[in-house]
Length: 579
Image 1 (cartoon, one colour):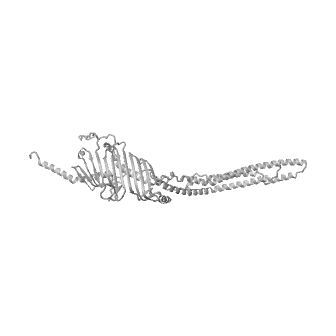
Image 2 (tube, rainbow, N blue to C red; image 1 turned 135 degrees about the vertical axis):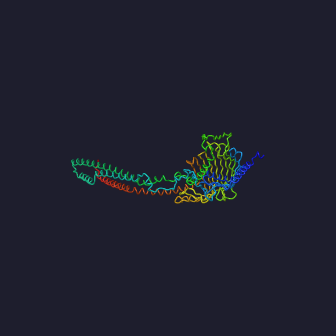
Image 3 (cartoon, rainbow, N blue to C red; image 1 turned 90 degrees about the vertical axis):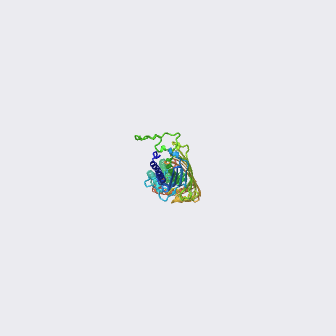
């Protein structure tokens, strides 16, 4: 038999087998640990660490211990950690190039746990910033409720009060000059005395026939002259009275003009619902924007792994193969009927840590039908996860259905709920004068999202109880807010966000809208009344020189009116000559 079996060769073979087995036994776990850490760190962009790993072949089993996945945006926190991850694989499927895992057990699962040292990678690119939703929390309309001062109001206004007063003064002076010219042509005292002398002369006429005839003719001429002068004086008086009356009315309107102009100018600053803006958006918009932006960031981070594999390696078109080197042959893979995804995880069961975690959120639940080629798998990815932070009453619930079976029209549905959250310390309204601090309170939050590609339809509902709100800003607005919020113990928030992250359409409502809006409206009304008075005073001050000039010119007209009245009276006092 020794001629047929080369014992030395068999010994070498067995030695190699033993050596290979020894190397496997000694280094397989180490290689698996390093492979998971290396591949995970590249995928996440931050450090992925294991405390240990175990790999068995018969049966094909993997166990990972002390898994920590760093949050790339906060290197001092773990986005996810687990005490133990264990699963069995179908060895026959592995031989065929497929990975089939019926169940993954994730024990001691938690998210957002603190780290002892930074998990940032030195050469890793900076993580993508959170998507900010434009237009959420825009403070235009309310802003700091800064009203302009009187000088600014008048600088921006098209004012005609001063010009009109100057025009009135010019018109009165021009009319006075014309009327003075006409008055100079009227009979003065000398003319009146001449009339009186003519009357006296008529009285001294001889009583004879010739005297009577001559006296009658002279009386007729005198009567005609007096009547002509009376008509001239009456005409001037009528024109003068009309000019004085019109000028007096114009002057009275001008004196009231500063008040009218002041009211007109401040009307555009009045506190209307449109002018005050949406208090809910101003108060909660920034925080809602951060919530939605953070959620969208993680969704966008995970979404590439939910897309069909062919999309991630080059799209729907055909892949052009490189021409193989001569004599190396071709690796031809025939299409499968029915086609199946390369990797399928039917169930992932998560359980919370046995020991309470400080600063982290323990999670438990179920994820089903996880596949990286969802178009080849008949079921969508589903998740039902519950979470709780140690030492707190708050509960977190996440239900999701990620349906990418039709790559051209994916649809994901997410339902996130938080009940009994401790909201003490939450701030709303940004860093401006509208900033509000929730000193005490509990919050129940609900968010439902339907995501179709880049399109989103998100509905939000928040109920806050046992609340104590305080104005954290400074200034007059902060004081008004403090008064408005003093007796608020509960409030609600609801909203809907549609569109895309780059162009969202946001509608937020809150029960605080009316409470704060009424208080701010009254405050604005008081400030507007003060501003109106300041504008009126400034207008009157600017128009005073021109108004004084117009009053002086009008006084001159009125003096002329007295002169004409005296001359008219003197003519009327002449003896009646009959006829």
